[in-house]
Image 1: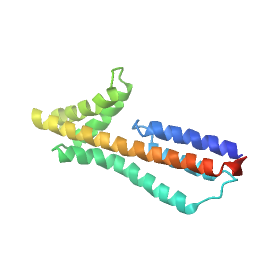
Image 2 (image 1 turned 180 degrees about the vertical axis):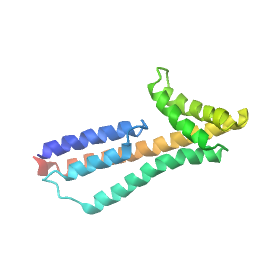
Image 3 (image 1 turned 90 degrees about the horizontal axis):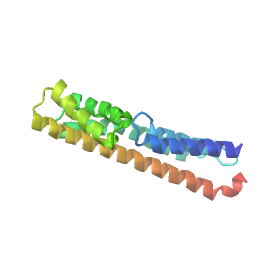
Image 4 (image 1 turned 120 degrees about the horizontal axis):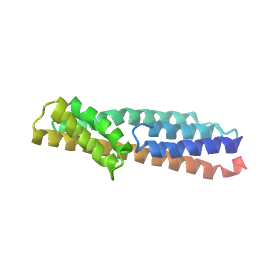
Length: 166
C-alpha cells in the first residue's frame, strides 16, 4: 500500500512541475496533493502542521498566479484587456506550432488585447504588453520554484523515512 501512495504522490509531483509552466494545470496544488499522498502512506506518521502550512502556501501561490500578471500589466499602464490577452495568448502559444510559443503568446496576446479591445496607442500598448509578459514570467517562476521545493520536501521525507516503507 505504501508503494501505491508513493507512486501516486510522485505522479502528482511531476504533474505539478508541468503545471507550474502550463497555465491549464494547477501546478502548486497538484504538488501539494503529492505531499498528501505521501503522508497517506500507512507507514508514515501524518504531520498536520506540515500539511496545513504547505497547503496554505499552495493556495496563496495559486491565488498570486492570477494577481501577478495583472499587477505587471497595470504597473506598466495596461488594462484588463491586456491581462486577459496575456492569458489567452499563453494558451494559444502553448498549442501553436511555433518556436517559443509559450513566451511569444502572452506578449502578443497582451499587445492585441491592448490595441484592439482597449484602443490603446501603439507605444503604450507595447509597454503594457511588456509589463504583462514580465508578470507572467514572475508568476511562472514563483510557481516553478514552489513546486521544486515541494518535490524536494517529498524526496526528503521519502529518504528520511525509507526504512519505514520497506
